Length: 491
Image (cartoon, rainbow, N blue to C red; front, side, top):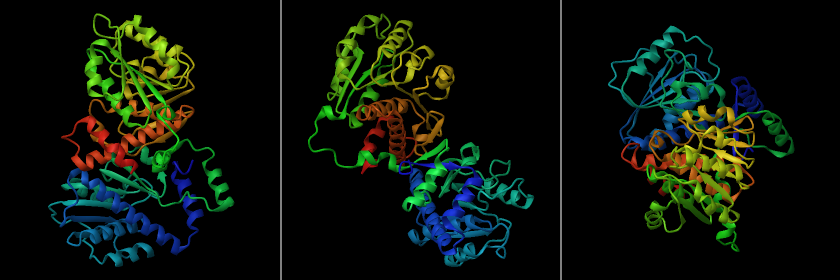
């Protein structure tokens, strides 16, 4: 699993694993510090693109502690000045320069910047603040002299606040308030719970790469009981290679999508558009008959089947034969986007899921207790927090659940796979409909592995959202613009 996801460890486990991998060898530790600092800088500059990019004459404040986190932050600052020679870097050593450990001192000398007094001047603000005061060795409580510095920094006008590994002070009242936290090498478990960590990024330093049979055995032993994982780009590897030369549209699966209503017509269309971009070979959509013609004009690549409607415009029970007549052609069924909550339509959805002999993706209005528990087909559920609270007690053991939220994760069999991609650009109507269609299309290409499809869908969706935000910003965009960035993620 280490090609696709890396374990999230406790601080004690992380300390032990780093000691095993680096072995106290200063040369190895320096190489890891260099990689961490450069990785943080590159990630920061990518994230700056969401607010117009780092300015050529930008200002950077580095908050440095004593050890490796200080070294990481100083190397990150140096990397930024290499990219932007006119940028100005200021360094504040919270504990003074004399207590710097050797590698942090080496990083400072290479940066070649004087330090600030321990009390902040009357600064007008900074474009970037990099927090490298404490790492995972921090023990509460914060000393008052450190808390004072962090309070002053938190009060400054800053365009982007970046924490290295963990925000200094963890979750204490005066802890550093980050916009992004860049977990270096290993994601430490406390990071998942910190409200002041901002958005999370993972800087992979290769600490889980096995070397030979002995290394593979050590990695497997470490991972044997892990429940929390962070998804890596490796999860999309299967989508990035050449497809088989002797293949056709049937090779890549057939998705059936059941949804839509006159009240909520757009949701099912967005799911269909996403399924068409997923790589699936065929997509058939069952929608209210009053919508079918307009939708066919919008997405002619899909096959549209008009379904009899209730008086209020939902899917009527009498249309069930349309699905039964064609269901042997399908590999995956998606039900729920824009379905509405009419009693008759929800009864239909319960019957459809209960009768299904193929994997099912359940989304939107179909996320009702009696529907998610119906039948015995494998299934992927896509709830946000409110929907999850409604269905939690009825989720069957064979379900994979994509828990949508500021920190989306995929849950199956007690294990959680976290997706650090995405962000506020997804906080708009329709983003979940795109995720459902994308995931259903991926499941059609590998119906025997719902967990893989869910992880791929969540990460692909999030990475496309990152690219959209970096190209267009977080505000003046439409949800469906995300579809235009799916291809760029794979390329």
